[in-house]
Length: 159
Image (cartoon, rainbow, N blue to C red; front, side, top):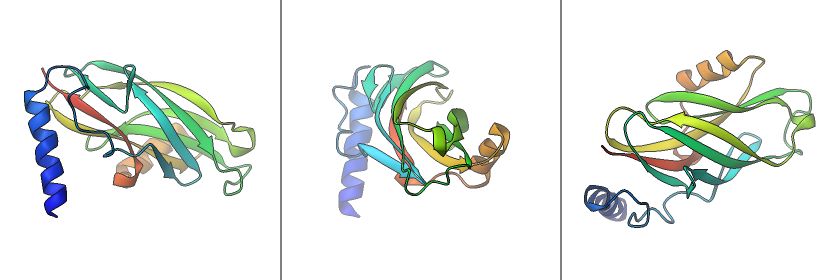
């Protein structure tokens, strides 16, 4: 408990006193190098060209790229999968894959997010959903938002 409180304090202090680069944020080691949801593992995330963390303005467009890998031993070959990426507390924003596992290959996927309008620190998360339609996959996020284990990045929104 003390360690978690200490880390939160350090992160918040750094957020309030840092300039607009990610160099002065103590995020390294706090965000996983990779995260898994169902049969998909995402890794090597970049947000606006920075590894796993971006400092952005409210409402700013964020360009992202992530390595996407399917576990072919666990996935259903003919099921249709969507990989939904969004911001914790803000909702789903994009789907970076919609297809069958049979045709899935490890690859880098590009995507875009929009920063929240309120200043703060936000978690970028993802969820793998078996669904025929993107709309249903997004609804799945709204019904059960992905947990902290699916956090792949951090957005620091400041004016």
